[in-house]
Length: 152
Figure 1: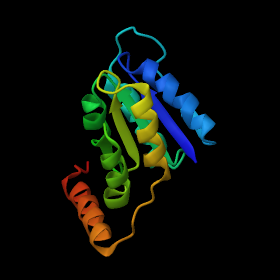
Figure 2: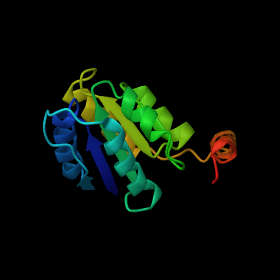
Figure 3: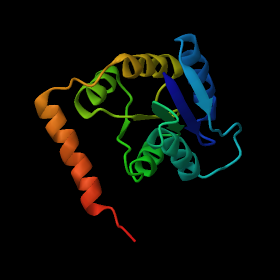
Figure 4: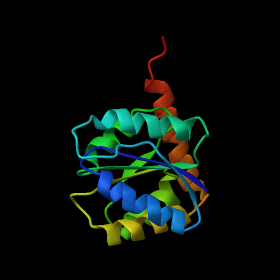
């Protein structure tokens, strides 16, 4: 699987650890920054990673900031993205099985690298359940996105 990953200044350390871990799991990783603690704007990194997912240049995306909140908000503004902010294993599994998420957000200031690695592993290994009720709900989310997306 090809994973696009990005972080802001508050998440770049965890991003680097997660990137190495994903590669250990046998996946390809494209790193879209940032690479230092200098203040940057998380929407810039969220949009770049999400566009790679939407355009099919990456299978999934992972975003990391201080809390994961800003990244998840920005990610979910991109049509075609279903991003979940996750800090526990149950949610990592459920968001893939039930919501078919294609982007994962986490907060470096909220969880440590060990838990983050476990979350990433569960999230990458879990498939969408394909259950009729979940397909119906994901389709309703897609319909909301289409209905409320402003067209020029």
